[in-house]
Picture (tube, rainbow, N blue to C red):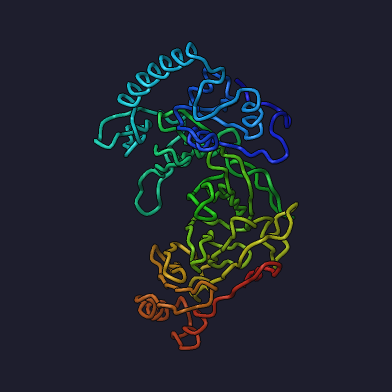
Length: 430
């Protein structure tokens, strides 16, 4: 049965039910009874494409069905002893079949996984193989930057007690036809959806066609009772366009998106102000000012593109960005002398705020790491200077790379973060 088009049977107050549990609760029966009513009595339930077992029902259609097929405490609609005996027999048969299915199918989906070459192997709670999924040809798993492990997330997206699997992959040889992919697999290993990030955007001086790369993604619930969403950060493979997309967890469709002129490679979902509504924190770089940046978004309002002080970096065709704020971290003198960027390299949720580790490059392969502890309102709680900052600064002074000693004024300047609110332009390049 296909999903109906138009509004037939949905009604003015109709809403969607996405699981057998929700359908059963609406009818005040168990999920098994609702499934039986679909087979025996024509309960209007639709199968969604893209994966086994995915259903949707509309309360308006169910209400109309109840008017034509009366249901009371699970009684057979036509009454009578004959129908009662048939109903009992069918019920017993369904119960036996359901018990057998329950005995042999995994009850909670994957409990873990391993990677066997290019194949994802899902494991049950006891570590035994459940199913195998080979990723698309000529692709490889995207790795976590720190652990170097494949970016694979097991999580129960539809609250049915069984875990879906999210897999982040990228092409061995990226091209417009081989973009990065976030793939969602069902608890039984069938593919539910694929999300390909980014699109062709432009600034006054550059164009940003596919492909894009997904450095990070995370699960988010906008409130304790809300259905989960997935937030995905992706950036152009070479240049500075970055998309932050909020996806419907069960379909992979974009609900909201925000664009930024600079790669945002770190992503954390955190309710810093403890109001029950988490924010999206993204760390990376801002190309217009060559500085480390923290972007904070409200998942329910995020939109548009960052407003740039340097118009050359303004992404075209977007409304002004709707953020909670952007925070810019000043680069050290040696980083500016190198012509490089400092970068918000890691984010750590803290009670009442967030910690941002900012890396400042120095000549060679070394760097200095400064830690900024921000309050929930993004004001600076304190800054912890890198323990090698003074030594490296002195070494560069003795080597003639820089021409001054480290002063208290320069140290104070490192604490001078800049918070930019919605509608305000980002700083231009320093």
